[in-house]
Length: 136
Image (cartoon, rainbow, N blue to C red; front, side, top):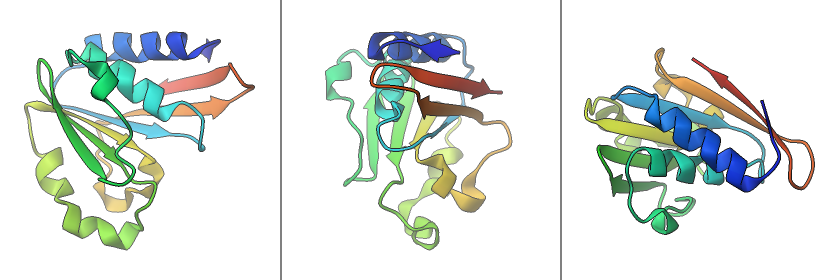
């Protein structure tokens, strides 16, 4: 699908969250500036986070946790090397059956990818337009 604005990207993500069963693993792929964080905010809104303005990319903290209708783990692997994943506690996070796990830069997950994950590929088309491919 094609998104013509950040608002449209956000709305697509929110709708996806509304239609996703828990536990949920949503893996976001795309280059810098492709809209992964906007998509993550829309997901958080759809999962019931009341103040989505607090949802930001955890580039330096690596993992942020929010509470909505379920626990939400928002992980950003932009600054991490594949070998450094072991100390983050990802196994425990992915085993939480009452949570939605959102991963930005999911291509850096290596062995932690889960077979039932929803994969979202965001591509930059122009300043306002993104291509969004969602694979179940």
